[in-house]
Every structure is written in C-alpha cells, then in structure tokens.
Length: 469
Image (cartoon, rainbow, N blue to C red; front, side, top):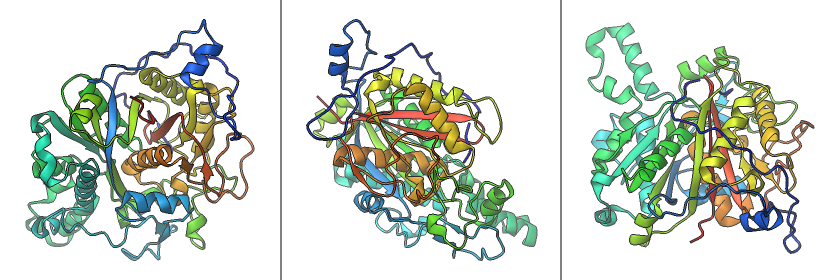
C-alpha cells in the first residue's frame, strides 16, 4: 500500500558516501557493481563505511520459513517466482461477488499438522497459525528441529514477529456474535487471539524461548521493523538467536471492503493474474494477499559454535518516518532516500556496492514512482543494478510482505537467479532501472537491499549479502 508515520527506532544521520564509480566488468557477464576492495583501489582517498567485524555483532541468517500462496516450502516458493507464476485468483473463501474487487492472494490448502495440535488449531486465527508454522519451519531449516533445540540457550532466544492487522478473523466473527446474539456469545479466546502479539507469544511458548518477545505493527513495513529490532537485540548482546518477520491474514470481507473504501485496490476482475503490475503505466492499485515470512537470525559466533548452515549475512537496516500523509508517500522520495542511506551506513557499505534491489513496488499509481524517485537520489548510476517486484506474483501480504521479500532476496543471493517482475506490458519510462521484466535473469549479487513502506509514513530498508568469513 502507499506508504510512510511513527519513528520506532533511532536512525543515524547519513554521511556523504561515494559519489560515483565505474562499473567493473567480470568475465563476459553484464556489468556488476563494484566490490569494496575494487572501490577502495579506484578511490584510495575515500573513507569507506565501516563494516562489522566482531563475530558477536555480525548477524547471519540460518533459517527461513514461510506460508504463501505458493505453499509453505521455501524452495517451491522461489521456484514459482522464478517461473513467473502468479498466485492471484478469484476469492472463494467468502462470497465476494458484490465487491468491486473480487480477487486476491488467497492461501489454499494450508495444513498445520505436525506444527500445531488439533485442539489449539481449532481456536486460532489464521494470523497465529501462519506465524507458528512459518516459525517452526524456519527453525527446521536452521537445523534446530525439536531434537536440536537443546543447542540453544532458551533465555537468550527470542521472537519478534509483527502483524499489521492482527487476528482480524477472530475480531470480525466475534463482533458479528455480539451484534446478532449478545455479549454472552463472545468466545473467551476473543481478546487473546485478536491481538497482534499472540503469534510470537504462542510460538515462544511452544519452543520455550524466554528471550525478547513482542510484535511490532508498522503497517506494510512491519517485517523489516522486526528484522531491525531483532538485529539490535543480538548486537547489544541481549540475545544469541531471534526468530523475526511478519504475518497477516486479511482475506476477509471487512478487510477487503476497507481497502476498497480506500480506493487502494486493483479492480481488474476479468484478469486477476495480471492485476499487480508494478511500474506499468496501466497499474490501477495493489492486490490484497496473505501469508507469513520469517528468518532465523543469529550472531555469527553462535551460528559457528553450533555449525549452523549460513544462508546469508544481514548487514544492517534502518527505519524512519515521512511525517507527511496518512496514506500517500512523499512523491519526491526525500525520507525514503534518507532511510536507504541510513541503512547503508548501518550496514557499513556504500551505494556503489549495491547491485540488487527487491523493491516495495505495490502497483499503486503514486507509490511506485515515489519509490523510484527515492532510489534515484541514492543510486546516481543505475548501470549494473537489477530491481524486481515480488508482489507482482504474490500480491501485497501487508505486514508479511517484507518477510516474504527478504526470503526472495536471500534465495536470489544463494541461487544467482533473480525472479522476474511479471505483467510488464507498458513500462513507465521514468523508472530507468532494469526491472527484470517478465523473464528471470542470472545475476551475481554483491549487496542487496529490500525495502518496505507502510501506510502512515513508515519507511524501512534492510541489506543482505552472501556470507564471507
């Protein structure tokens, strides 16, 4: 959604960084951005940002878990993205025939067996179900299934999984019960299961994790806010391991109707799979979707002690606020560009080292170009930079968007393949970046950034790279 209001975490001011750099040609491949060593060789007088060296403060990603329109397997999820498949379809979870928008990213065939006991599962909102399953799958991916959790000091392991909306199905159903049959028909689980912190609370209860545990709600920027917060807990020595990310399950009548009332949604009902078309001249709004995306983040020291599989390194992140409008971003991209620069400072990298951007890119008329305007302020040369939009295939998963896009970013780093931005029929000439239009591309990633912006003015940017000892 259009994005950008409350400053939750401190953002350092951004110093001046390298102004320009010629792209480095590697073998016969397309130009890629310069590495740190190459930059320093060509700019010997420049002072490079300082990258973290302390293994207690370096943060690595060791596991990923998700629930998505493509299922709950990370490999299948990314294979579907690489193939350019769309997960968008007509909604059949309820009768949407009277709505101006009748489609979305509805999850089908979800199964929590083996992750949530049947008695509890019957009571939970999908928001909690998705959180618990994604979290436990991420731990399995990190080599920390049930039998291996003894390797973790549980008072130094925490969960920060946020949600933009919380348990909205539970909330909506119980409001109906109140209005139709009176307060005595409200379930005693109404309050616990509609508040947004219950997902991470239940996950921690199942795992016995007694470290930092809470939920952040920053609209569509939620996941990245959680990654930044989790990283700070580790850097400050208050945790060794954190499960972090976002979850939302908004495919219900009142949420669909609410976003229709905001005039935010695409109404391309005759062809839902082409509805989300970031940076296309004919875009007409975003596509509402649902899911969960979480990472296992650890200090490098902790990961190495247990011989963990290291998928990528989290370099840094930043958040700030537009302080501008409750729904629309600043079109000039001023605060978003500041957030990107602050992220690069926190990561200890220069703009010239970034050669991949997983963009927020929701397919809204104003938001897409506002983000591009911000990127142009930071990346003066666009040569060698690839930028794509995961939402073109999975829609906008609200608070979970950044989590799923972080997973897509890490998979791109690991595989060397970028998924396409589909539905690029009539591209905006002002974009100028290579948007990986309609076909996947091979690309060696040096430093990647992933951006998420939320209604209210919340801006967030995080940076990853391949892990190098």
